[in-house]
Amino acid sequence: MASDQAFQHFTLNRRGSLLALLFSVCLCLGVGFNTYLAFDQFKNPDSVTYLNTANGHFQDQSPVRRYRVVVPWLAQSYSKIVLGNTQTDPVYTLTDSYKNPKLLKGFFHINALLMAVAAWLIFRICIGYGASAFASALAVVFMLCGSQWGGLFIGHPFTDSFYLLTIAATVWGLQSRNNIWLAVGCLLGCVAKESFILFIPFILLAAKGRRGLPTVLLLGGVLLQVLLRWQIDRTLGLPVSEGLSAAGNHIYAIRQSLQTLCSLNGLRLMITVFGLAGLLPLVLLLQRSYRKQIKQQGNVLHLLFLFIVLAHALLSTELYRMFYFSAPVIIPLLAVSFDYLARRYRLADITS
Image (tube, rainbow, N blue to C red; front, side):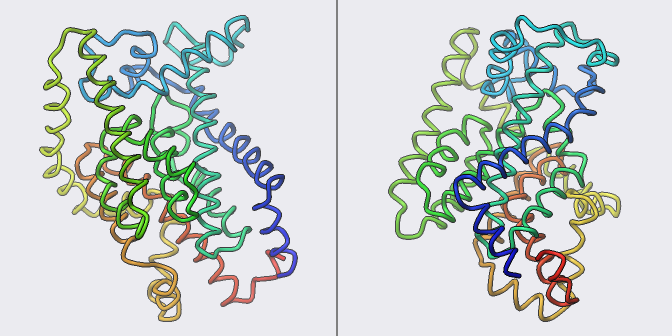
């Protein structure tokens, strides 16, 4: 295992960390490419909203999604500044009915970069949990490639990659006591998605004896969200209450989500959000030695995080897509599971 320890040390130093990030970018570009090619602007209403807001068309858009402007604005700016003088290869638009292929390509590149940073942070979270670098990298590969959601977050004009990044940045900031990443997560989380406020109890409890800074950062994030909403509603001449009322109406989705979750097919889809590899920790829970190890490495805060993500999912009509945001806790658990199997069945030489 000496070589794995050397690899682990290398991935945590500056040069190795940069190479891990570049690997993550390349992986995300590959994972999302086919989804990007097969894009249909009418397939998902989220895509329609974000494409319109990228072009500055906020009127008659979803009162829930029209405030999530960071990724659309970045994609629009990138498409004009970087892709403005480039020609779009016809192969990129074979199945595309949208009239601005450069904007779609802008979304693809921006989402790939954001998702890559999120995956890189989750890789570091895995190592922080005590998983080996090899198992951590393998778990992140399964996160991106073993499920449909990784490709959709990257290849479609969504904003989920940015939201996942803010959650991962918050968890990593708390785990490593890195105030910069904590600030990125707390300040931009509410801007990425208003439901980030559900994580406030987790953040304050995880901060333990240093709750002053997270509290200030969270207040700053909420203030940014309020100012953003006020500016957009003021420009459109709409009452602020419209967006707040629409967000509050998500509570009516709980009944439908529970019915879906309680069905056999719904339970199957929930368990396999991260692909078949997501079943591994559940299967290993049957073994006493594994349960003992998990108890030593985990704590109540991890359960609180999963409960918040589950509540988040129940409030959405897309239950499984929202549960993908549990990755900063589920993927480290998967990495630990790989290490457990390697030790138990003497597969350690594979990682050395």
